Structures are given as C-alpha cells and as structure tokens.
Image (cartoon, rainbow, N blue to C red; front, top):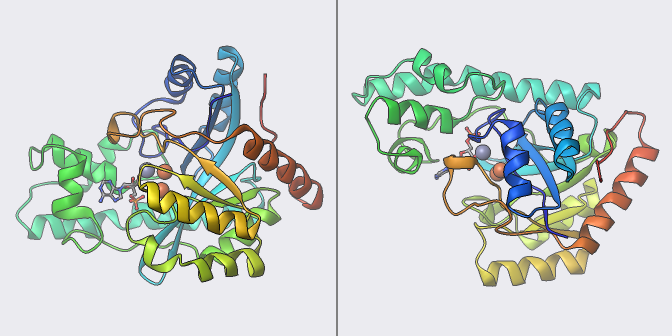
Length: 293
Ligand code: AMP
Ligand code: ZN
Ligand code: FE
Ligand code: FE
C-alpha cells in the first residue's frame, strides 16, 4: 500500500486540475491519495469521483493556514466537515485575507520597479478561491521579472523579502480544536520546514497535544532531513501521535516533490482512519468519509 496524504491541485496553488492529479497518482503507483489544498475543500467532490473512476483511495483534507506570532504554521485537517460553521467561518476569513493582501503585494512590487498588476495575478489564479504567493510568482514569471517560482520567492515573496505581506491566519491551538469539533483529525504539516522549526519545539508540540488535541505529525516531508525525521519520530512516539509522510506535491509548481516521494505507513493510516471514526461519532458536524475501493 502506497499512501500519499498531502497534495495540492489548481484549486489552490498546485498546477494539476483535480482529475489529472488523481490520474497521475494512480500512474505513479499510489493506492491512496490525500487532497489537501490550502484553506479550501473545493476539489473534494471532483477528487472523490476521479478516485472512484481510477480505483484508488481518496482522503479529503485541507491544509489550514495558521500562525504563531509572525511565523507561518500549516495544519493538515483530514476528514473534517468544511461546512461546520465555526470552521467554515475561519476558512472564509483566511481566504479573504489571501485575496485582500494582493494589492499590497502589487504596490510593493511596483515600488521596486516591477511592472505587474492585480489583474495579472488573478489571471494566474483562475478557478481557485485560495490565492497564494505562488500565483504572484507565476505572474512575475509571465512578466519576465523572474525565471521561476523559486526565484520569485527568493527575491520578493518569502518571509523577510521586500514584497512579503502578512495575511490573516489562525492560531494553531484554535485551529486544532475547530478541526476536531468538525469531526476531523488535525496533523501538523512539515513541523520543521522553513521558519516553523523555531516555534514548533518539542514543548510546544506537547502543549498542542495536551491542551488542544493534536493527533499527528507529518514527519516524512522533503523539508526534513534524516536527523529531523528521526527527532520528530521520537517526539511523535513519545506523545502517542500518528506519524504521516507525504509528497506535498504541487504539480509543476515545486520541484523535488513528486507524488509518492514520501508515504504514510499503512498502520499509521489505519490509526488515522480509526481516530477519524471516533472523532466523527463525537462531533455534531457532518464529516465526510474516506473513499477506499
Ligand atoms: P501562501 O499560501 O501565499 O502563504 O504561500 C504558501 C505557498 O508558497 C506554499 O505552497 C509553499 O510551498 C510556497 N512557498 C512558501 N515559501 C516558499 C519559498 N521560500 N520558496 C518556494 N515556495 C514557497
Ligand atoms: Zn502550496
Ligand atoms: Fe504547507
Ligand atoms: Fe502543502
């Protein structure tokens, strides 16, 4: 069983349409695909239909934008009801913040001498309710200002670079509680990727478990080297957390993140499904089920 539980389609900042992502997953030898677009469940219906047609498993998820101070933290919400009002309201607020910051980023780029408009960015984000920096990066590529997404982040868009603008995001403890109340399973994405290593200490992770009900850690991710993975696995084991692994595939939008490059062990996937069943039973929301052929 090859299980990849964290991928993006063009409903957020991946480049594959959902049916192509699912077909690509099957062609890559995956048995189960998790679709986790940023702050939206938009691709779920199409994803499940495509998975049924392709004969592979499908786990609906959302990668929820969180923040600790000024540091971005991502929370994978598996099998949560996206229509549960408190969660739906927060996700809508995050998406509004995504769209709302685009003019400020454009103003900064213009001040830096880069000729680019809000419309140029929106043209790169057609069909997604979740506009992100990668769409700004794509517009910069089209404008000839940079060669690729990576150069756009390195020069302009990464935290600390001149066109970076903060947007609304959820406090992780609160996001974890919302996901659980919506009948889902909260797993911290790439805990030691980029800046989040500084804030997601072993103590902080333990608090997210004890005080809020965090259920898992994404240990096997391209942002983690072998030492990170060993240390995170030890933390997860000590806290009784589910351990996941995934590609964080973004289509052509990110190199070195091919589907299945990291996978989740079948016993950990079983544990996630079992906890999801219990979470759903305890919830007043209407969470979806995983599709398993
Ligand atoms: P946003 O949702 O606007 O905060 O942008 C986050 C997306 O940008 C995620 O998909 C990341 O993979 C990508 N990203 C964030 N930082 C970088 C970076 N330094 N280089 C390339 N991609 C990045
Ligand atoms: Zn992304
Ligand atoms: Fe992420
Ligand atoms: Fe991701």
